[in-house]
Amino acid sequence: MHKRERTEHLKSNIKYLIKSRGETQLSLCNASGLTRTTIYNILEGKVTNVQQSTIRKISDFFGVSYEEIETVDFEEKEIIDSSISPQGNMNPAAVPIFKESLLIANMDKRIGALATLYPLTYYFGTAYNLIAVLLEHEIHGRNEPGDLLIIQRGSTTDDKEKLVYDRLTKKLSIVNDTISSSDHMCVVGDIIEERFNDIA
Image 1 (cartoon, rainbow, N blue to C red):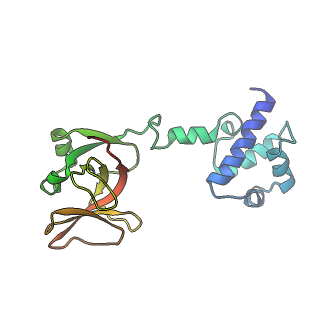
Image 2 (cartoon, helix red, strand yellow; image 1 turned 90 degrees about the vertical axis):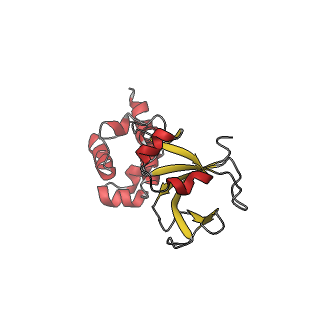
Image 3 (cartoon, one colour; image 1 turned 180 degrees about the vertical axis):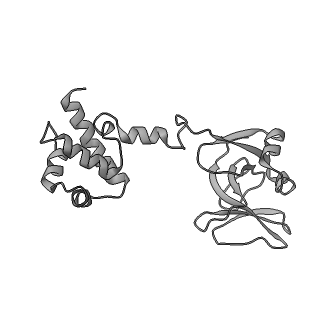
């Protein structure tokens, strides 16, 4: 790889790493002991031959490989390695799909058992205990019949919307608030993903 290419990789990787790690040029300088002029000159493409000691300080600061920072496109690499990419190395989770009307009957069954009984969809991401609910009725102002909701069963995180089943009205609703199951309200779990009219 030519020096120019290595410098281009270094430049784009520093920009990407600063942005993706929530750092600034100043925090990089302060922690690595490099001057702002040095970083500025690299980012502006004013140097074609960056000293090895400088590259090592930058890679150490970001906790990345000293060899890779000049030769690999980190942004592309991290997108591919991330769990949400079909090109990644993580196995997608197999998620059993069943109709809304079968939800309550299947609430307490194990995912492994459900996966042998129902069709599957796949979820690329870090989650467990997932089910997919195929809506048969509209959730007012939100979802239509045929939409698929991927739910992390039993999990209730403050910042995620939750799917709730009302035993009295036999209807599903989506809530933002922290809510616990009661005699007539059953919290199904956190909504991880919505797929609109995924299956007719």
